[in-house]
Amino acid sequence: MIGWEMVTLTTSLLLAWDDKNIAWEYFVIQFIGGSFLILTVLTAYTNGYKTIGAVDEFWLQLMFIIGLGVKSEVVGFHSWVPYVYKQASTSFSAISSELVAKLGYITLLRIITEGNRVLLYLGMIMIYYGGIKALEEKNYKLVLAYSSISQFGFITLAIGSGNIFGYYGAILHIIAHAFAKSTLFNSAGDWIKEFDSTSIFEFKCCGLKQKTNTFSTILSFLSLMAFPFFIGYNSKHLIKYSLSSIPMFEFLLHLGKQFDFHYLRGFFTTSIYLIIAYLICFPIMSRINEI
Image (cartoon, rainbow, N blue to C red; front, side):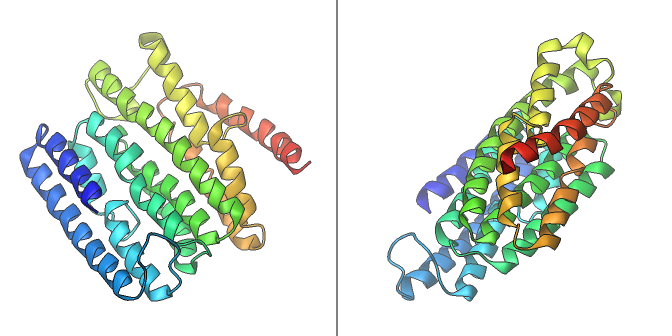
């Protein structure tokens, strides 16, 4: 808890370079979440849990989900995310999305080992909510912010599944998302500076103006889109396999992955070719994995 609050203090100071008022609001929100989390930790300690490990009581798991949810952008406790990310620098957003928000999910992996039905439903809601909100936005930083919520939904869903495939899928997706989102948020600063706009519909002829940045951005999006041969494909395949015993959830998960394609709308003229390639390669790679 001391280490986590030091992270909160550090990120608040980083945010203060952009806007002191936003930094103060961010710190208060994180402090409230941290305070409830400390209460939860003390409650767990008084109920016999002396070390960090699996928590059996469902009500105690819910307390951890609430406390960690504020810090880790779980839907229902995420209202600060678009407000802060929209006005913060892309460097802060990269650190927050790739590292700070992941701490909550790493903790959930430690304390919820047998699955949790609430996390299953929350994860599915996050996938669709984040995806739909990202489609509605034209501000590139907000698109990435809501995309993070959607991607965190896959991790939440995997933890809630309670099996080994979901566990490994969650770990792998934490890594995949960290690499992809750190690249996307950092490159966003270059795009915004190049076109003097945050609107993705203003990012025209990207490949001609910043070839290296375009290449790294496409690679990051391909990983989040679960394109074959990328780490994001492997993580999402494991998560989908973890839900094989729940056909409806497996179908909804596959349908929810289609949101990732549309984040590229108005951004790259080649996106249609990426989608066509995905539709051709995905069935082939799925069959190979099954074999």
